[in-house]
Length: 434
Ligand SMILES: *Cc1c(COP(=O)(O)O)cnc(C)c1O
Figure 1 (cartoon, rainbow, N blue to C red):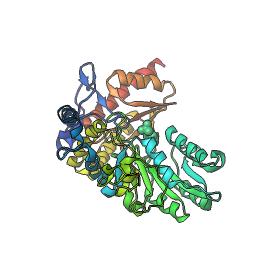
Figure 2: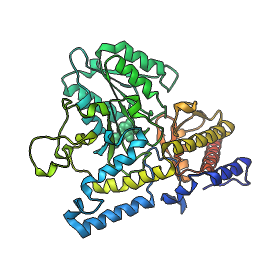
Figure 3: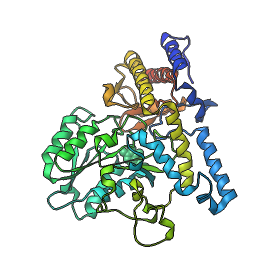
Figure 4: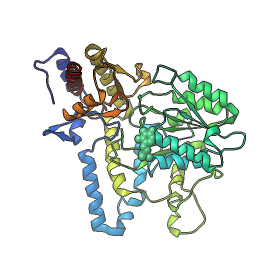
């Protein structure tokens, strides 16, 4: 990585913060992609979190079990595959603020949204609308649209969105609550992101649940950018359901098995519509192979197929690292320190050239920054490409936003100095050339 010609006060301060960081030693467990023989400054854990050596070893363990036990691996020993997801649910529950029974792992995120909408979107002629974020991740938009059509309704009249006000990237919280109130009796479901994927905006999910329930709607969350990033209290907020992927802030690996939450108060309700498969049945009677559906206790009843053991193998140790770190409160403390530090560097060194399109108040953000390139002489896309070439892993969102996420598990304060110095230099060069 690039270093300054002389140590600055900021660099000295960063090194001191790193030295005192209780999470600092965890970084050594993660495997960093390389550019020019050096660890990349990996600021894209919001898109794909890094592999740890623990997770790599765990995959080897499962391959060994498979090769030495064959089919007996399903049941043999304490880590028999047939119930391996239970440990993941135990580890996942505190991360999303749920009881273990309310959490399961299965499929992938968009599939889980579909399965949960089968259960919790029950449109009727008088009440058929779904409220989503106008800039929802395309997959969420498609899932909602197709659910509406599947039930015989029309997205033109059943799909409601809330957009930012003119001149802002951020959604005004009052506008969400006002839309819920406005569509009131016609609203069947509010499906909202915990953290907006583009801007990093965090929403007041408890208030959204309360407003949705007030008008008789169900409320579910897509926590793709929230799980492992911000503190969540799904149970206490009384959310009906939630789904999230595990390859972003939870480091489960590309396409890793996803999470789902169903609130306790729905778990015993046998009238809820559900797509069924054998893996949703009670494990005590499952292998009697009868054809009467005896649901598994808890959110596991939503499982359809047996889970991917190799995917679960990478996820479990990554969640154990979160637990070892002290859970979400500890990650959040470091996030706030990293965000504070980077805010100050950006303000001091990049004002007028970079604008933060993410919210500024700490309560409305996780660790993701959306950095808008506002210097008109500069081609933002070219700067992003130059960052990548210089060993900074980040991502680009059309038309002019560089997204970065200093994730607390493996980002150092000194990485933020390196990042800002590199960006400063590239913007200066691009401005002079432009
Ligand atoms: C990452 C992400 C997805 C991806 O969905 P998959 O089903 O895992 O491919 C969907 N929605 C949101 C909001 C995301 O951030």
